[in-house]
Amino acid sequence: MTPANFDFHCHSSVSDGLLPPRVVAERAAGNGVDLWALTDHDDLGGLDEARSVAEAAGMRFVNGVEISIEWRGTPIHIVGLGFDHQHPGLVNGLDELRIGRIERARRMGDALAAIGIPGVYEGALCFATNASLISRAHFARYLVSIGIARDVPGVFQHYLTPGKPGYVDHRWATLEEAVGWINAAGGVAVVAHPGRYKMSGTDMRRFLDDFKDTGGRGVEVTCGSHSPDHVMHFARLARHYEFHASRGSDFHGPEESYVDLGKLPQLPEDLKPVWRLII
Ligand code: AMP
Ligand code: MN
Ligand code: MN
Ligand code: MN
Image (spheres, protein in one colour):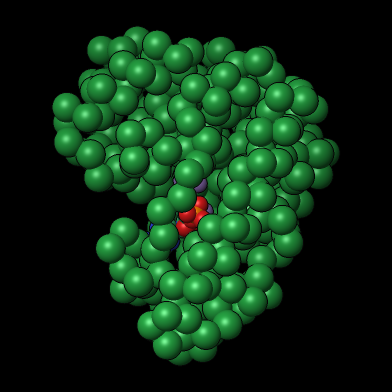
C-alpha cells in the first residue's frame, strides 16, 4: 500500500501536547491520515495506546519519538521512527533526558524568581500532564494563566527564548547518543524542522555532514513550521545528502498549532519518502 497521507511528527499529553494519545490518534484518522507516528518529546509512554487506537481506526502506525539534543551549543531535535520501543539503550537514554529536564525546570524557576515571578516551577508542574516530562510549553501555559503574557508565543518571545530571563542553558543528549540509540533500536533518525534552527547555511551543512556521518538518514522537508521557501531549500539539501524526506505537522493541540494532523502539503515528488525505510 502506498500511503496517501503520512504524518510523522506530533505530540500528546505524554509530553507537551494537549490531547491524550487516544484522542490524537482519532483526530489523525478523522483528518485522513493513513500512516501515522506519535513523536512525543523524550518519552515513549504514549506509543502502546497510540498504536492500538490507530490500528483500530484503520491507520498504519510507526513508533516515534522527538529527542532533544545539543550540537555545538545549538539545541536541535531529532525524530526517531520505526524503532523497538523496549530497546534498553533507547529507554535508558530517554530516562536520563527526562531527569535532566526536571533539573533544568528548577533552574528556570529560579531564574524567573530572580526577576520577581516566584513559584513558576511549581506552577508549570501543575500543567504537566506527565509528571516526568516537563517542557517549556508547560511553563508558557502557566505564565499565560497568571497573566504574564496574553498567549503562549508571547511568553516564549519575552521570557523563554535565548537571551530572555527564563531561558537557561542545558546539556541535552549529544547527536551521537540520540542517533546511536535510535539506530541500535532498529529505527531511522530524522532531523526535525530544520528551518527552525537559528544557524548559518554553513553551520547547517556542517550539522548535516555530522548527522549523516553519525548514521542519520532523514530530514523533515514538509512540516508545520516550514514556509514554501523552507520546503524548497530542505528538498535541495535532502537531494544533495541523499536523505529520505519526512513530513510532519508537529501538532500539539487545536489551539496551539498552525497545522492540524495530516493537513500539510505533499512532499516534492522526486524525494524518497522516509516511510520506505520503515514499512
Ligand atoms: P523544551 O523541549 O522544553 O525546550 O520545549 C520546546 C517546546 O516548546 C516545543 O516543542 C514547542 O512545543 C514549544 N515552543 C518552542 N518555541 C515556541 C514558540 N516560539 N511558541 C510556542 N511554542 C514554542
Ligand atoms: Mn513541544
Ligand atoms: Mn521540536
Ligand atoms: Mn515536535
